Image (cartoon, rainbow, N blue to C red; front, side, top):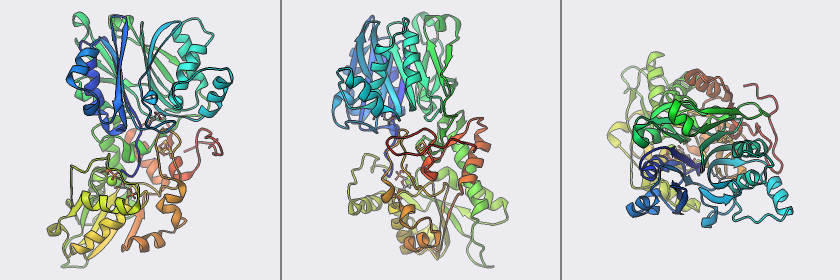
Length: 492
Ligand SMILES: O=P(O)(O)OC[C@H]1O[C@H](OP(=O)(O)OP(=O)(O)O)[C@H](O)[C@@H]1O
Ligand SMILES: NC(=O)CC[C@H](N)C(=O)O
Ligand code: SF4
Ligand SMILES: [Mg+2]
């Protein structure tokens, strides 16, 4: 795993067998976090919590899920971006009791003003149970002076800055909030007739692939800056209450969800990820075409680096043919499915070994051909460099690398754990593409331009919102702690 991902949140309201449905929703979101998983269900008026380290299937036995029961529940799959990585107290959902009753909360994202908020509460003598930023939501809610619980939650959300897609379960309602920038995705689903006495149930998830698993129909996304309430009235009328958080910094949805992070079968920010990835591949073909071949030469073969580059490669191939550059699409590597994302790779030597365990080239598709190999991104360069060697060893005549995003130059502070700036491949060569190609030992290297990325993603997703692309520019749309810059224009 070159990047450590983000978290996944999933919750249901008025759904028979709530804990079971949430369990399956979390399995669908496993790719978003593998350090730990947790589930809170509301059984009568009792809130029950079960959480642990590792994959969803490791954390829960069938008995655990049965004993959680309930008709309302929320779940979380975690990759830590703040605070403790091992202490169970920092794992979500958080489940507390305060003057308004029970409250369970799960968060995907990273707060940009966490240090400031923590100092404020600690100075007041507030006792905290973890060093995780997400816990601060609980203190913001319980310290709110507002009288109704909905207003307390709204008040808390207006004081948080940065990336947060949050779901909350209380004794009376279910609530879902997306930060005004809309960094992380969040969508709403309906489970027809799956509620008490044949009424409709509702669910909210980070990605639609989790809705598919639970056979929920996609209703719509929670909009950037929207807080929706699902309660008894929703069950009776089919409508949600919706509140709007004040907008401070414009919208900036994470473009990397489209490039790499989200599951290809999900609909993110309103559009299928596969469709956007194909469009990125098409744009890449226009910017960095397939090399021309001499008459009588074998056609170039276009291959993806599995898994995440497959759909961009299909788009690259389609567009190349349309542009009058004949070539074939094929799979040049077998990817060992048993080498999972939880592979531990602390040193360069182990990372190199990991790549070799993961991929084996298929000689018959590669021998004597010009090979154009497409990947979605380069982080440290480990994958690309190793795979290029394997391609030549398998008989490739030339190797051309195409990347369906710009060079990654800066870390993410909005819920994704990237390597440090110094470790990023592009920074080692100050963006000198020729030097980068020489280190990779390839005949050519082409990255999608930042403009091409934004244009293609906007065109194919049809979104009216802007994207964050700070990891390609170093210009952060919301101030980051302690020295980050902020993009005040956000005009792209
Ligand atoms: O330059 P590097 O440091 O080697 O990292 C880049 C690679 O990491 C990602 O894939 P990853 O192996 O995480 O998983 P995937 O199978 O989902 O593509 C990305 O898609 C690149 O292939
Ligand atoms: N990846 C995430 O969304 C992490 C959520 C939260 N900041 C944590 O560290 O648990
Ligand atoms: S910095 Fe990159 S990964 Fe992080 S939110 Fe922005 S686009 Fe996404
Ligand atoms: Mg990859």
